[in-house]
Image 1: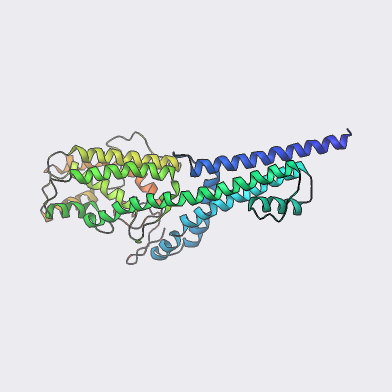
Image 2: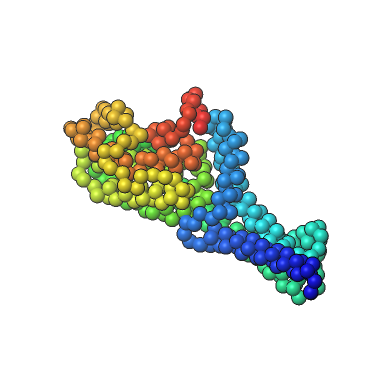
Length: 365
């Protein structure tokens, strides 16, 4: 065998290896994204969502909130539809390398052969065993990819529906945008302030499911609520603040479920933050600074007092206790509100936005 033949054989072998790596990497990425029931930050998913997100964020950078919300509502669906296109495109390229390794041809015929096999068009084929094996395997993998996406979408929307049901129910308690102040005031007026155990149990379950769904189905974090002023992260933040205020400031019997709600909540938010690579202090101290200042706390204390809510007399201790609860979820809450471009909500997205321009309900990020 001549030196030229040896060199050609080496090039074909390298093409086969490249093709196998691309195909195997794509299939593994699809399995991790659509099948594996745990949060795995897949490189391909990260690139697709990051690229699509960059386009949407650039387009909405100067928009008022109402327009930005409409634009960003399309972000997750568009990115999700782009995923199978990216997967199929990589498979097409990978098999082009494999087909060329079997029978070196110009780019045009190889592209046609790979595309015909992937999309099961049948308008290009070569009647040899190696070619048939590649054609059938590519067609089979392509069909599996499409089937995975079809099965994935109902799972996404089932998780979205369960999440939003609690968000919608919370509006009845905490208004829109939701605030702990309104929740506690309304609970007092309706005589429910001493009977909130069921509320905290519901939020515990919601946080547990949120962690599972928003790490294994990470695109859910970017699916926006049906109403522009609702958000899963602002609902979560206001529920945690309500529990923190009840435990620290409101003079009612100690409710351990509120404490467990806060712990379940901040662990859930931290695990979601871990998936997205958000940094936070995993072991904050009770006296570490938080984004809420003393004056803001005092304002809420005074407004609760005016309503008639029974409050603990020692304001200093109440502030220390509230700060000690809030420090567990403060930074991660604001980081996730920024990541998802959450709508305005006091004590949450109002301080996650770097630059704010207020004109009625209009905000810029």
